[in-house]
Image (cartoon, rainbow, N blue to C red):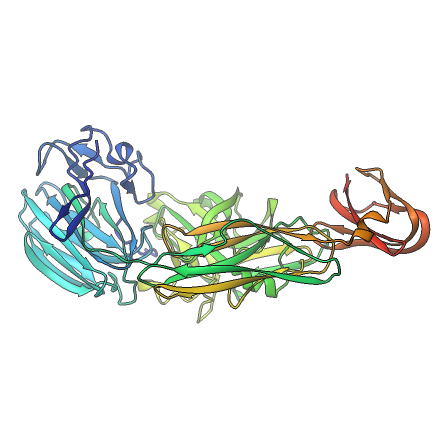
Length: 592
């Protein structure tokens, strides 16, 4: 896909030839002509939006062919991707043959630094239907020529070990550049992500062209980083009998690969809704100004985020996101508006992750407050939320478009201005839009009382492991009550082959033999509706907790039979802790 700024049978081989390994080749001759490429091979090929079989998918054609009898025809809205798995070391060649007819508007291709496209363009190349073209790097164009109405070879040589690349068109070297540079600036990553054949053309035209004999070769073997950790199974530890108590668990981390790898470990808790009515506001914006952002795409999303560390410091783990507030204008031009909540991303990509909750709403001019049909529990993961809408192509091209409100910040919050107009998220003020230094006028309203996070990671929850290096991460558990403590560890890395592992965590409370055997308790009815009756010899103390760890009842006694009213308790599961005769016992009850 061309970079657009808003505001405005397989032929697979693996053979050795001298020092070169052909990793993948495709002459498109094994496919059925007239049918779409990715529908026939979605293992090696996909589309920009990862939507095989849609209008982004390209048709196998017999109209032209460099090696008889098929080629790939790119036209209309076709947007084809081949992915290279985010290589960060090694030397590679990407070869293909191109045919640009004079009857069309030209042609286009680009290289992406990331496996998932739309994050960082390594370069863009535009070809006119007159036989000239140019490649754009660092915002500058370098011209080249090619034969029109004739097949010609294209080679992209990428040396990741020396951060260098060369484009060769029709057997003539066009330019050699620092590969970590991008199409519009010098700040990028030295990483080979994917190649894109999009139906673009110079001057925002819609191109038509043909591709044949695609070959991806490894000239010098990659030695990328590799993330390994042990133990790699679920975590089961115990503390007690005296509380508060602590224990720990060590993960051994290593990187047997040749380049550094990054990791992040995120504790996540099994939480239930809080019965408290405390309210907190989550926003990145200052006062809403008259500023607003118009988008030149047929859909747009605007989001803000809060990292797990901030949610912990603000004591918000265990609370619920109950509503989302957003400022909008020209809402009559909006199609399919939704509020959305996004999962956290790992390390490979910044910004919001996949949509994990969305809800349609009917927008009004100005401030909109949308209550969530299902409140979202903050469980320890990063929190991202925002608004999504669509608009017609006519609206996107007009002067009057839907507007998402923002503040008048001079220096934007790094979590306050994320937006998406294609498959990838980016900052509002990225690239040519650097003057848009605003934060979105989006607020989340969070209800409930936070729990005490009982997991922590030392010495750091994220870090870098050097090539052939190792490290340790110690998971510390601090337990201060008799409740069940269950959760998960999300272990992320930027090793594409090992991006995420989720470990279940269970911390059990070890009671002494005297406590477990010397006290007999009867609690009834269970489930309860109005009252709980507790019977035991010489009851001294009763405490009742919900599963978020919050005490909802506490009483001192010197009796053998007591009755507790459950009026006002939220329906759910509770833990009743009874102390009698110097011993303690905990039992689970359900309140309806």
